[in-house]
Amino acid sequence: MKNALQWKLWNLPFFDARHEEIESRMTVWRQNFPALEADIASLTLDEQCRAIARALGASGLLAYAVPDTGQGEIVDVRSVSAIREALAYDSALVDFVFAMQGIGSAAIWRHGSSAMQATYLDGVRRGTRIAAFAMSEPDGSSDVASLSTIARREGEHYVIDGVKTWISNGGIADQYIVIARTEDVPGSKGLSALLVDADTPGLSIESRIDIISPHPLATLRFNGCRVSAERLLGEPGAGFKLAMGTLDIFRTSVGAAAVGIARRALNETLDRVRSRKIFGVQMSDMDTVRMKIADMTLDLEAAAMLVYRAAWLKDTTDKPVTREVALAKLGATEAAQRVVDSAVQLFGGTGVTVGSVIERLYRDVRPMRIYEGASEIQKLIIGKRMLS
Ligand SMILES: Cc1cc2nc3c(=O)[nH]c(=O)nc-3n(C[C@H](O)[C@H](O)[C@H](O)COP(=O)(O)OP(=O)(O)OC[C@H]3O[C@@H](n4cnc5c(N)ncnc54)[C@H](O)[C@@H]3O)c2cc1C
Image (cartoon, rainbow, N blue to C red):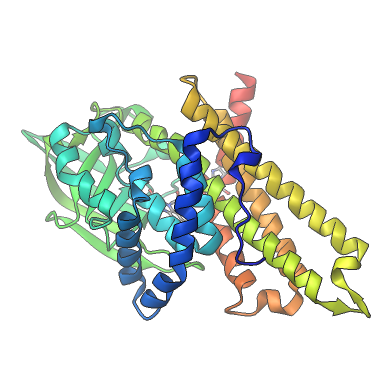
């Protein structure tokens, strides 16, 4: 069972007939994945990411994360979430590459001029251009309104100075959406979004950051980095709203990726307890083990419901869904952490052995409670919405 996703979107009430295509696409992707994994095994992390992006582009999957809005396409959060769940089941790195192409280009397909869309999006959709989103800074990224990177208007240009850190795809990206302060207004109203090519003079990679799960990250330095004012995305001062709009689309899908990781951990654990005997009995016959499996199942299924409810609401209503999105991200990532931790416990020493699947899942799930808004930030959003 361990390689079987056993994934039935149709058991949830949030999908309709067009989502059937996602199940069949993901079946094909998963059949081909072992060959891709073997092909890229000896490559560096950066080369792996580029190869994965090209494979995701060739498979057509990236088109779901990078819609052709010029042709009237819109992003379908249920599709993006279902794809992320299935990708993360096999590989958090592949899931990350898929998600970043969407997050790193959303400002262009949502707010970019048709010239910008024509120049940049096709390559991102085909996986031949790597996209990135640079908002976080060294002095506390949770407080987005306090960002201090400046983009000063000089005639027909903006000149950017400042430091961005924790930037996914930093160092391998071809383009960055940069959130910087353009207006002489404190707080969130002074921020704007600019599209910056990676080879623009004045933009450099200060350092790369290694974390517990394979993930290309870097600190970027902007030092008199001059870009055309036409690179502004949306209105001046609308950068905070634009960034939150991007997160409102993709935060739900972080929850979906967490569900994929939790589902893998549960399936691996079912196999393990069925095949392992301790104290002369099958682990699967022990009531305490069965209770643990019940807790893991409850967490997983509740997480999936929160995620796909938020995705369905985002797709089908114009009303604000920030509370539901925050519940999905918070609920699913926290639940997935508990599920994976229980898996480690039931695997015993094997669960913490370097190179085992469960050990990998344990490292992969942990950053999810921090990025795209830490759990505490999601709680603040939910509490505020409940009390307003
Ligand atoms: C793997 C990974 C990928 C990332 N990718 C990107 C990217 O592509 N682009 C980008 O811009 N950023 C990215 N980030 C940055 C990420 O969004 C930030 O790490 C996150 O927002 C937290 O900011 P921080 O690390 O500066 O922690 P801080 O803001 O210093 O917060 C530290 C901790 O304090 C707690 N906390 C914060 N605020 C509050 C509060 N108000 N009340 C109570 N507790 C609070 C939380 O537990 C939080 O984790 C990434 C981070 C990681 C780990």
